Length: 170
Image (tube, rainbow, N blue to C red):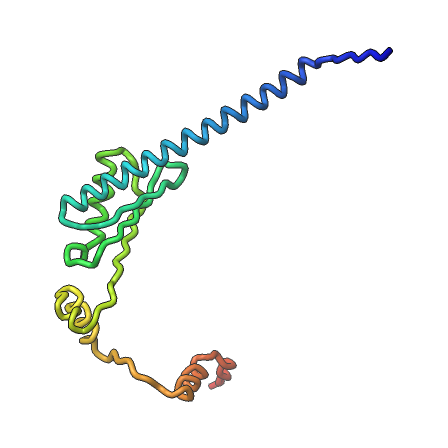
């Protein structure tokens, strides 16, 4: 006849239960923080987008939390326009608007102005781009030409640091 006896160590069972409860609580904490960050991201993006739209600027706005969701970085993608030539001023207004409506701090605003590939005729039709190209071409002394490889190699060899010149004694 075989006798099996099972002994429960209650202290070990309590430790295992405490570890499992702690892990479950930590996972719930992380999920809650992630949800709060997502809601805050949408609020910041919506306020910044609404402000830009109210001022006649069509832009795609995205925000990202930094430092655990206490501060935000805002990314603004917009077509180049005359209204955004002073984007640093608009940036300060966006930061203040977000702070006023949400209480969140926007640490930085990054701008992206994708320039479409246009033909010469289309550039003439877009006054803003045409002005930019004209001012770029007007800069004195700025030319772009093709050069032979030997000329490039000679210019490059002139840039390489050589031995220091010998000091002359007087």
